[in-house]
Image 1: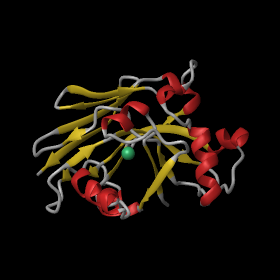
Image 2: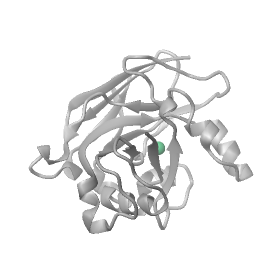
Image 3: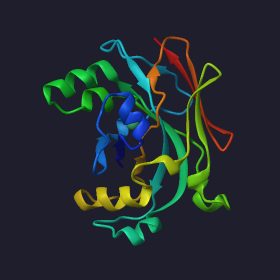
Image 4: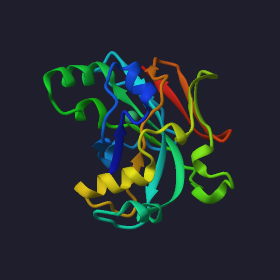
Length: 206
Ligand code: ZN
């Protein structure tokens, strides 16, 4: 399986990093080896001085699809969850300035937190897009949003990405992060909540 990650999908986050708001979804991959095993701490790799947390809504692909039409995209996922796209920001900035790929900064071991909990997308009568999600660092809320603020909603992401690569059952889509990203340090505790329910808790070690 693969992790498909969307970049700059919230205008406020694109701006905080000095990036332009994209005219089409921007995506990159993480391999399955990037997934942080459940209950494992996150260790800051020795080759970076600046790892950022990015909390993101996740959707799991439930059927194989190629060039999925927008009106059918909702059939390709049933559950939503929450995770972190850990990013070695210093390494990413260096790669960006050289015009190089981002994999070193994005696809390293442990860089993908995937909650063990998944919730049916039709669980909420008001629609899952309206449900708030948050990231707390050491008990303080640092990121908070709903899917309504996405520049490209999940159906659009599925239609777009599947034009270029086949989506397979079990793939996970990281849908981009809202503003408030920041660095982690030894001893930090990161806790993600969806509609107030805790989805993950990650201890950081330097
Ligand atoms: Zn991200």
